[in-house]
Amino acid sequence: MENKTARLTVLIDPRKKEAFEQLCAAQDITPSQVVRQLIRGYLADHGVNYTSEPTEPPNTVKTNN
Image: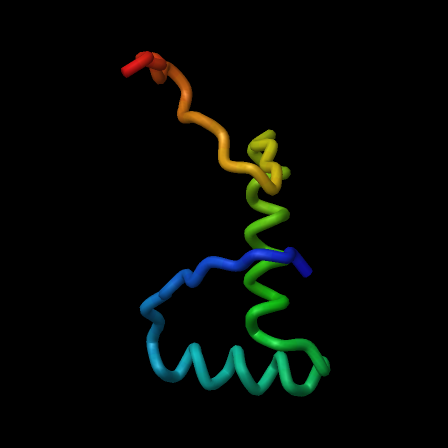
């Protein structure tokens, strides 16, 4: 797991949430672990590289103030 974490809040239908939590429990994995796997896969599928250090958004101009 990553050393630093940030919170991501997701709104979901209560029945889907319950079914998701039950499936995760049956597979002995936490919902957070599944969501992290999904996000890593989504980023990889779209060729997005991420690192532990934040990067500047594209087309950002640095100014020396």
